[in-house]
Image (tube, rainbow, N blue to C red; front, side, top):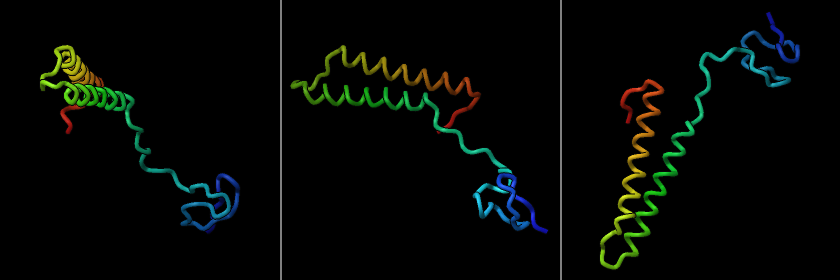
Length: 99
């Protein structure tokens, strides 16, 4: 026994997954689509890139091989901020340790 499309009203086969006329799905999805990546993860990537760029710029430009203290402290502070941000996001989501 044929059924009708809920979108356009065309008669379609009983086992049809989509309507051949309008392309509308004829079933309800069992699983919700995956959530997009969190904005916090993008922020962590940007901060991490800033840390790496600062370290690379100043380690390559210092002739004596020593890094100025302010660069060391900047990298340290940014690293602590990233780790604290990750811990806060995980705590809010209620997640445990994930790799």
